[in-house]
Amino acid sequence: MTQQVEAVLEELKGRGHRMTPQRRAIVAEVLGSHGHISPQQIAGGLAETVPGMNVSTVYRTLELLEELGVVSHTHLGSGAEYHLADDRDHAHLVCASCHRWFSETVDKLGDVSEALRDATGFTPDLTHYAISGLCRQCATKS
Ligand SMILES: [Zn+2]
Ligand SMILES: [Zn+2]
Ligand SMILES: [Zn+2]
View 1: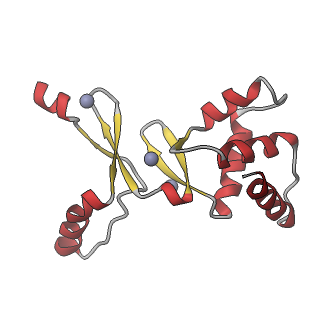
View 2: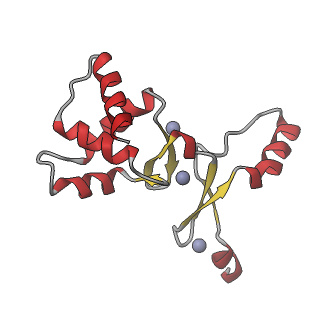
View 3: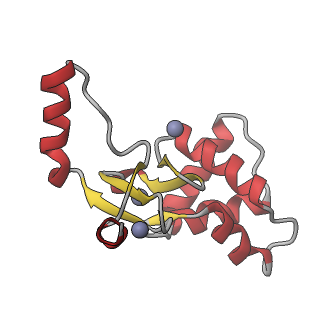
């Protein structure tokens, strides 16, 4: 883990990015995370121990990490959201009524991709943007 953090920091340095204590802390936090990486949560969690931490620094660092292929982003209704690059194979379904969101594996949505491709010739990336709609509960209510 620590080794991986150092390797990523070295690569960023090699690309001419200045390594501040804030950036180091963010990189370590991101590499140690699982599932969804919320920039707000990272900034909030580190604010107590790392002076000068704020959300825009977290966003900028995540962008750099994305250039290295360490993380990738998707768009939920509330803004960009990040995953470690090997954990991106799921779609996000956002309910337009209760605003909860759910993740669904891409395997399960294979038929949807295929139907779109057959009908339009377009190959969709269902993981990049959240799919808006109604969750089971809200759909039953209305
Ligand atoms: Zn996700
Ligand atoms: Zn995007
Ligand atoms: Zn709902």
